[in-house]
Length: 120
Image (cartoon, rainbow, N blue to C red; front, side, top):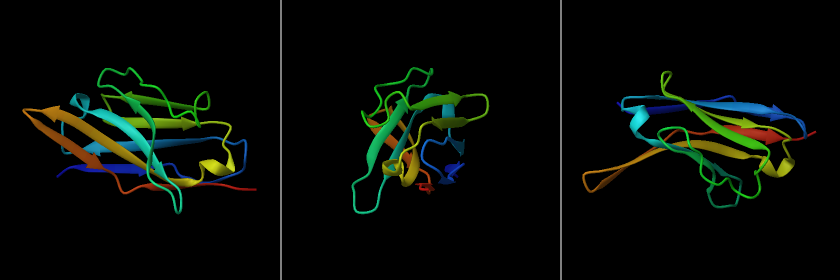
């Protein structure tokens, strides 16, 4: 059974930091590219950051560049999102995504999301 379980969200003051984690199980984690998305109320889900199977990152969303860092630990089947200098506009539900293209098919899995609220 495929599972992606996010944790680490919560309420933080502007300028603060949070570290999100996404623990994966039920599939070969090291073979999947991993991403973090977020969705704010009334807005579409947007890609925040992505990381390749070997740990190379792809360009971050402009809104988080220089503040957020994605990383992964294939030994622990976990992907992380370090969020620094948080702003109220970072408030959203953050989702973990796993994706792989194999044999002509896309395999795409989502977590249930974790709420991040940035407010004083």
